[in-house]
Image (cartoon, rainbow, N blue to C red):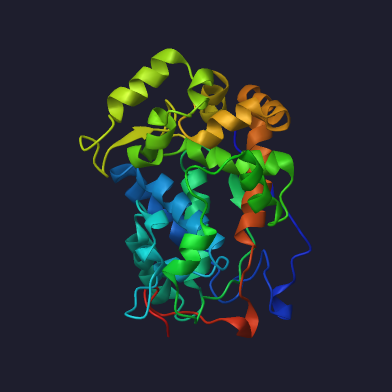
Length: 315
């Protein structure tokens, strides 16, 4: 079934210098098609790209807002120097899309908007909902800091309470918070992120993990030097498809990350997990709402930021 979600949260009109669902209607009306067309071929050639672009958006928005700061490489600093940005890939795709957009609409579309549109296509082109997102973000002018990234990006060991608190600060409800974590339905988890979960002597989480799945994870991610930084496991059986398989797997004791197991054990989140596991439409609806809220968090608009010509450098 095809889904189109458009959500409004009191978003200002473009004439007021804020975000708008029609921001580029006159200055670059073809921008959404440019991004979609540019990524379709990429996704066919490399089906791991959608997960990478979705994660890129999450990591950008979590650190000082959705401002494309994660793309900047400078001698003064870079968010990519943070260990929590290990595994971030495909930043070059944003630069590629930016060059195509610049050829048709010079100095009109920000890199931060392109990140949001690319993440939107990552969801839509892999089977998820097509989310209508407001546009009009500006790019940051401040040199990025890996210290900010270290401080603000949650570690793989984050539990339910802390994760819900992070999303609540962005205005998300409980179902929206559980839904945004459903982005894990795309992609993989690096073994380094689950070593503590698998081998910590005090770890009680394995009691809720399906035994054969626990054995599979230990085989895929052995303890010690045999596990390299490049080792990984898929997040769910359909890791190239945006669907509700993440919730089905978690409810069956096959969640990969700590948060996957804890949400099944927590009475409030477990009810939502179960609902999403049996009703994909509900998941898509709540995820779309959460996606828009995340994409609007900490944005720069009007004179607060700039439109970079080169996404990797401060103007």
